[in-house]
Image (cartoon, rainbow, N blue to C red; front, side, top):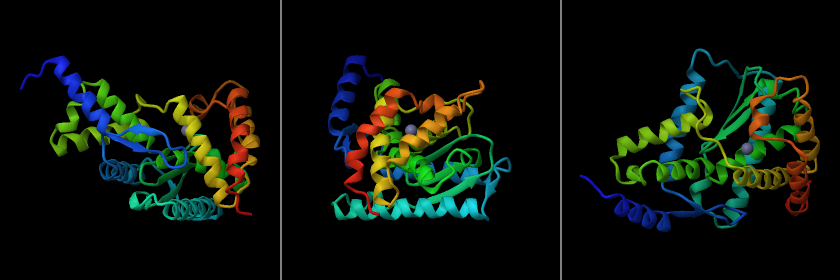
Length: 267
Ligand SMILES: [Zn+2]
């Protein structure tokens, strides 16, 4: 079937108008052309693909692995109980997983649906529980705010006016999974999708609040990002710093967000 471009654009705009969801805490309305179930399922598939890859070395025993799991669980419990108490429903009952991966990379991420990876290269920088909670809280913030789904939705709009929205489920899952792979560098070396600055600062805001809810003082975020910035010295900059620049603007932004987060701080 051949559809004229203006018609396609109109259809797309109608879809966009009626396909919004709301970010918890910030209340921001976002474009949402892919369902949570679909995105979370694709993410879970990418995650297990990564963990079972012979090149991936998962550290499952020892104090570091336990630390990642303990801090992750503390965050997950605090976030879920807050969201449930505030009427956000069951869509945030994630199947959480927290794994430590052996790698010199200074990196951490949380896929949609709560699939978290911390790379061992991050641990010397995040050398306290509160520092690790800063990064994990931030990454979980991206997942709770459905930033991946938003990015994928925006890409769908750009690529042929949401043609995938009405496509067969198999095609859609394939496209969703490859988009997730692209976002997290699984199955491809190319990172075509990355989060916007606005999404990054939203993840900062959520992350500070989440760490506070879990009993970690959000003031630690400033010192942690300054430590991250110091990784820049000596030439080779971790890729994480290119997507999370710890410059004066971002540090000032974080400082401004701390009073709000402190309202949730459980000592
Ligand atoms: Zn981020």
